[in-house]
Length: 500
Image (cartoon, rainbow, N blue to C red):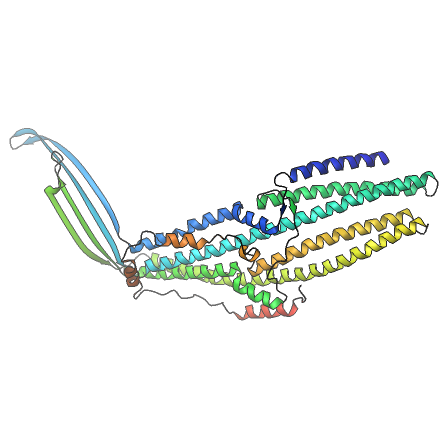
């Protein structure tokens, strides 16, 4: 049994050295949570992908505004014909060729609001996308925080497991020595061997868990963890549940994105209603034609200009169906706001309860370690005078290590719970976590591309298109529904108190 324990210890030490060497490959400097957040903020592929998607979404605004501007096209044609057959002067061949080119312009003057409501919908979609980007950013930063404290916890647990193996190895040596002089029985030695073997197995498990946490950290941060420093206190964690809930209902990106989605849906509903209104358009065309043999477009030139108004009279029910469809989509968007509110109520209350619970666990864990340390030392001293058995010493050591592991887990759990509460509130952004970080502002690209291709008369056409057109109005109103107020009141009354 003793030889097998030694072999297990050797294997565990080899695994430990190999894994640590892999995990520490790269910079050997100490890392802070702010450095990890800054690196992930710049390089995380999930964030980069969402930013690219947002830049693509920004393009819907200039696409919608293109309806305010003229369409200009150039066309050209060439033809050749040959006719063989009898004529007035007998059988002969008649040949002809011609070419033509023209430039055409068409400018929409009024669309009943179809263009401007399309612009409103596109703008709201872009704003909703920015909120979705903010939600993804919070998810990534929460993952960084969790990965960071997971590594710290597992490093501490590994240290505890190593210390436990060392203590139990000394205890086994002492038990063998006392067995040789007849102070204890073979049973005591076997108990020491069994505890050492279990401790070595726990050490191998701790090393494996640390490797898993290191891999998760590298995946989200983009760099293998080095010597991680203690994370700072998370800013803005509220001590009052009602305050946390009010902030969440006002700032959570899921709610604000849903509100922008409702604006877009209402604009599309108004756009669908504009299909019943007349459309006015101005057109102009200039071109020339001539023979291909001595091609000269100046031979015959023409210029045409005009204006047209079209009014839909019958579309087989198409326009009415599209209006009803847009109305129901607006209804669904309005209901989605209420769903997001209830989700925030749930997430904030759950996260706040976890903050309270983990705070109590941390306090209890600290007290447990202090008591277990005193108890373990007392049992060892009492064993030396014959008042305690070897099993008592082993149990005291086991209780101390378990208390230390519980404390390490409680520290991690409390920090993660605080981060989750901030995320549920909508305040786990990069600027809140690190005021010095260089932020990515999606509005920069949106402002840059929104007026691409603008012409001096865009504002005039936009103003005309809003005249006498349908307005975007809510389909249903659940923004301040009584059920929402009632739910909030009930949750506030039953919420735990005492967050620290």
